[in-house]
Image (cartoon, rainbow, N blue to C red):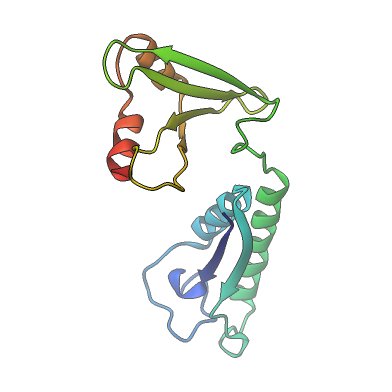
Length: 164
């Protein structure tokens, strides 16, 4: 599934981006907007990204265009740092299966050997949908350690609750 995303300049406070007819005194800083764009660029599921509601006629000193240019730069940097972490069947992943005494009787973890990020597989409840797939959610090494100690990680419980 691909995701399209847009960034509305109205969300940035007027002091940082005055080139918008609806700007407000409160909102994101230009720096925070750049951070969001960097994370958006990192997303391997994002297929398009746009920046909206810029009005050059209100941008007297080019301040908003500078913020937008920097946002685009951060998005591109994030894009080039992308790592395809969702394909757990690739050779970059090691699969770990933890057996538990109680339901669920096994938890499946994946570790990306390149990025060292951890993922947890949460099975879709049976009978809910014939087209449903298991969810792969980000987790951490501590979740894996908890499972090895017989505890079901909170991430698994929360994701499972959302699926049912």
